[in-house]
Length: 150
Image (tube, rainbow, N blue to C red; front, side, top):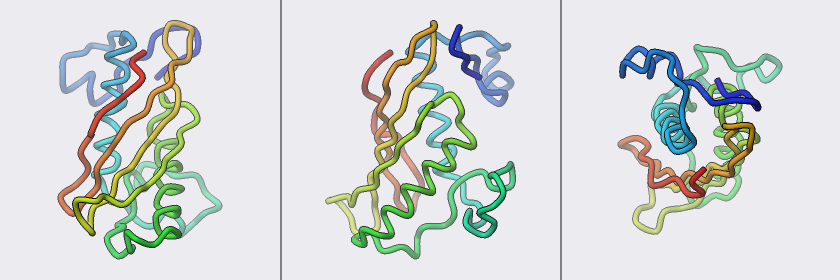
């Protein structure tokens, strides 16, 4: 994982799957790696996180609870989803420091949402602000872009 003094390492599955062999990531590769992990996290469905709010999220909680019954135009539902996304990112993507999520309706579809996830990545002893745009719909999450290149 990232440390504040050096470079970030690839997550275990990326090291195993892509022959990374534990190599450190440069800032641009770190940003891309975190973006891929965000898409995996947002594409995975889990049990409702609120079922046991007193305990921290663990491996069986990986992903987001099914949000398809939420009403995209309802501000409260979008804010609840944003809080759920922030909790999941804090628990499962520790390379992204101080994550913030905002959920917006998508003008292209009633059952689609746009999510903006922002935070900081630590690499080379410095913090780099990043901002990821993610589209959510019934077909899964898709990364729209990552701004603020480290």
